[in-house]
Image (cartoon, rainbow, N blue to C red):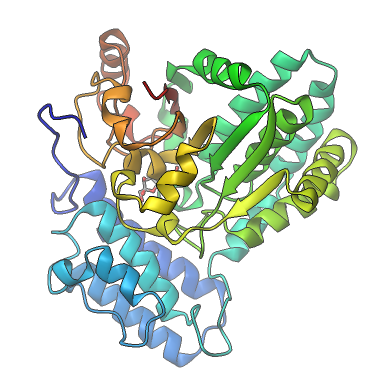
Length: 394
Ligand SMILES: O=P(O)(O)OC[C@H]1O[C@](O)(CO)[C@@H](O)[C@@H]1O
């Protein structure tokens, strides 16, 4: 982080704040959503009851002695935060811990009959199989005949706005959108993004995925187009090692998305087949690094991951949570330059994000003033604004 004054770290202990509402309201709603979606047995319901009581009114508790990832969580601060309220530790940490404990409660990590049963799968599949997805896939036929640069920009925007497909957010934001102004891009460095790829011509793109379904599909389409056009020779897709934040993508979700594409008609099916063969011959590879679901900012990424990202021509980082991790989940002045804050990233990085939490950087003063005039501070969390911000390594 720059040696300039830092910015306050987000905690969940301010009643009325967005972080507090997530811990106090969204997490209980997600427990109820998961409970209703599966014929869980008494043991799981008891564990969900305990989690509900603990995450809203209890203290951080240690992991079971035999937990497979106990060492990771000890490295990630569990020892330091054990015994403290969920609301008094970094918000990023509490949220990540919630999903770890939720999977524990439903038996996802096993051993046992519910091992590997993704508690969020019904929601992700329903969204992938939705009529909206049909429409978006059919629209690809219209794009096929357009000039390559226009196709690329359209697919980049498809990937960007796909980030609204955040099912955790939808749970508590239903209907909110109707009240807000038309969606708008509050920062746009897409020209720099394209010039980075053009310069490398045949380089390697890393894409750190966010949500499955209607966000992952346009991410994959963007990768397919860039591979097919030769603008990149290799793509590496980072997904989560286990279900996370309701709709974050895992390898199983990538397979579902590819089946959805290959099962479609026209251009969509062609993209699907292209991606399927790219996985088969190694032009597209998947990664599911444990740090992808760690409760920490990217400044604290381990050496192997740092070396990975440093080797990329460009890394596209998707979504709100990843953006928070890029800027340290701190409440920077909105006009603080993105490039000054994202110095933790070892290679050229482009953030594609719809705004769904308080953190923001890299706005010009005029844009900030216009947003505040139109929406007070709602623009930060409404999910109706987006940004494309790029930091090229000096
Ligand atoms: O799917 P995304 O874009 O990372 O958004 C995650 C959402 O969840 C949050 O963590 C709040 O729970 C915010 O970051 C954001 O509202």
